[in-house]
Each structure stands twice: as C-alpha cells, then as structure tokens.
Amino acid sequence: MVEMVEIMGVPVKHCFSTTLKTTSSTPLGIAVERSGDKLRNMEIKDTLLAILILLSITLIATAAKDEDEKDDDDDDDGGQPDYCPDPNGMYPNPTDCATFFNCVDGQAIAMSCAPGLLFDPETKMCNFANQVKCKNECRGPNGMFPSQHRCDEFVLCTNNKPKVQRCKKGLYFDANLQVCNYKDQVLCTLPGGGKKNKTTGNDKDKGKNKGGGMVMEDMAAKMRAQKELAMASVRSVCPKARGLFAHAESCNMYYQCYDGEVLAKSCPEGLLFDNEKHSCAYGKDVECGERRRMSKSKSSSEEK
Image (cartoon, rainbow, N blue to C red; front, side, top):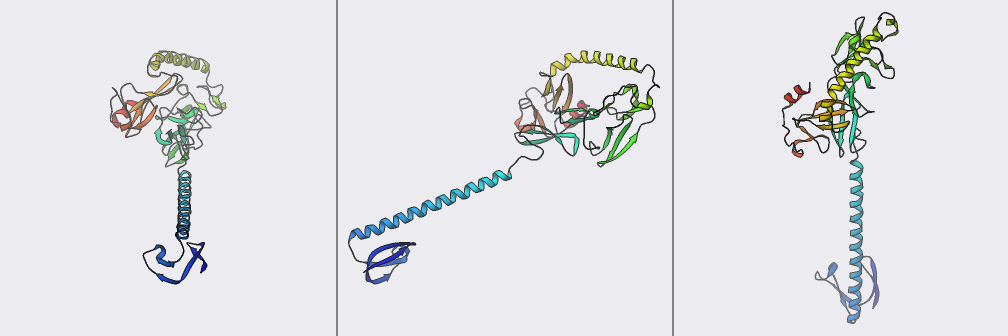
C-alpha cells in the first residue's frame, strides 16, 4: 500500500504494510512494519539525514544572527561619554571651568588647574582666569573669580551661586592674590576687550592717573627681564614649547609648558604622571624611574 507520510513536516512517499505497531526503539517512538526492499529503506534514511542537516544549518544561522544583534547592542551602549568627544585629548568640564578632563584611550581623568587659573578650551591649557571665556559666572563651586565686564569687580561664589562684588575706588581685583589690589599692580584683561592699561581701566578714570603710561612701560620692561632670566630654567624642564612633561623629582607631579610659561602641577590622588603618554595614570601602569612617589600633601605644598 502506497501512502504519503510526513516525517518531521516533510512528506515522504513509501510503501507500508497495513500492520502498524508502536515501539520506543526507533526515532520519534514510531515503528512501522515495513515491506519493500533495502533500496526503499535507504531512501528513507537519506531523507531523514537531509532533514537533520537542514535543521542543523537553520539552528546555526539563527544563533549567529542573535550573536550579531547582541554585539550591535553592546556597541550602541558603549559610546564615548559626553566629556570625551574623542578618545584622546583634553576637554572642558561644562560645570566647572577650573577643572577639565584628560581623555586617554576613551578613559576620562578629572584634573584641576592651579589656583587662580582656568581651563581654556581654545588653547587646551590652563590660563589666567581673566583671559578665559567661561560661560558659567561661577568658574568653580566656591571662591572669588574675576568679572568678565569690569576690572574693579569680582564674582563671589558660594555653592555655585554668584554674587557680584566691587572693589573700593582705585583698586582692581587681583585674581592671583584673590584680593583687591592697586591698579598699577594688576594687569586686567577683559575677554573680547583686549588688555586694559594698569592705571586706566574704566573710562571715568581717564585723566586722573598722570604718568600711568610710564608706569606701564616700566612694569613691562621688568616683566620682560624676568621672563628672559626664567627662559633658561624653562627650557630645562620643557623639551617642547607646549605640552605636559614629567617633574624632575616627583612622580606625582608634572610640568605644564606653554610658549615659555611653565607651571608645576599635581596629579589627582592615587595617580602618577606617565611621561610616555604625557598624562596622569594609575600608579601600577607608570614607570617612575628615579622620580620619587611623594605624598599628596607634600606635592600640593610644592605646587603652591
């Protein structure tokens, strides 16, 4: 008797006897008392084998597709943080101008400028506060910061809340000393307004400071002389005009060099300066050589 039977969903034409019985000794728990020659039996085996191969290929393809989708999801979730637009470089902290992020291979390390300095996104260096355009009036959560509008004003910040204060008549705010100082001792620079003469400043003061130009020239000459004397020592610690370089003695510290200016700065707690990567990194990854690993308190006092 010829009948069409489905084996695992695939129709198979075969001859069966009219006698059927069930046993657990054959695939699918079904045994059919067969009649026919060996060729028919081989055809059934070949058909079953082909079905199993197709099922195996389908399962493998499905598993590979699921794995690819999982990898895509992982890639989507592993993007760069907002403060690291590129894997390497230095980028500003949008909420605090006195700090910045040093990104190394996608890992962001929070760093701080020296007291009185702010991070300049244009030069990628810490600069004098009155020469940096900071969107936030409070360039740090607490402290006194130069006004971006007047040389005789400063912003007093407490928990990121700004309050404008004005110096007494005849004084300018000195960002380096954090006090109101005599005009001829303060070089005031307003963002976008160019440099102000040390003895002029506001328009209403014009004509009241005779000889101010001479004072300015004398101060400038002294500054040039001091700068020339300092250049020799600067070259000894700054192999290049700009960049970050290892401190001569301390592994916790480094030099920030910018066109003849040099600042000694400290890495954050728990980090050491890696002179190969020119950035602060975890201590276990840094080769200090002859540089000493100094305590945080000692390196901070040296920085001041």
